[in-house]
Length: 367
Figure (cartoon, rainbow, N blue to C red):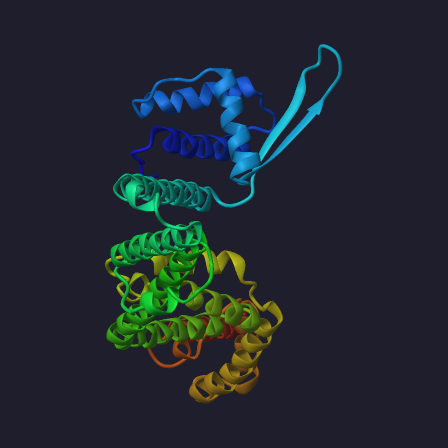
């Protein structure tokens, strides 16, 4: 909050801030509550506390004169008090701006009126003797001309203080409006000029830094596309992945470094954790994929072990082994893979069992 030199102006700004706080944090409050919080703020700002009557005057000023608040009052009955609520018509920052503009306009108008009165007094003293011999028509005409010159000088001085980039006085002097209206027109033109300058400067700024931003966004898309592929390969729902990845891009497109520089920032790791909790795994698709791998694995393993044992035993061993697996990948079924080694061991065990059974039967027969 910008502090003002005008104490009254600053106290109204602090009151706006206090009302905004109360509306957000208290469902019901009284004028005594407002006074308590307001005086606490005044003390923190080094200002003198006020009384309830002064607070009521301030609230009237905000609601009726400045039109910044909607003042709601409802009498609840005898000994029940009054229900009150002061709603801000604008955001508190817009209210600050309107209060500052109000006092600024008031100061300018008072200054111009003071200059006008002083100039008129001096001219009246100098020309008092000359006016005695002049006709009334000439006196009135000269007064009008003099007042017009004074106003032109004052308007010209005000325009020079505004530091316009364009010349507006020649056009403004031709307007048949009051001095106060001319001041309002000057202010409006200045606001428009400031907005145009901001837009122009903003475009130049964007032109300078757009290339850097675009490069970062390209890198961001690449990182997010890789992340998307990882989730799809892991069996997560594709539609949900695309939806969340698009939202992440929109959120980080103007601060892409938080994702790109993942060694420095934790944003990417946090995003991955959240996505794993949010996105569903396509269980049916995952099961079908595993069944396909099992069928293909059976054929591959059969070809690798068909010379190790007879086809019937090998078929039974492979079917039993693959049926019990919940997860399988192709890299584990070739020579050196964990499934290859386990099946080799099973075939050896079956052979040993068969040899043992054959020997045992021969022994029984000989006996």
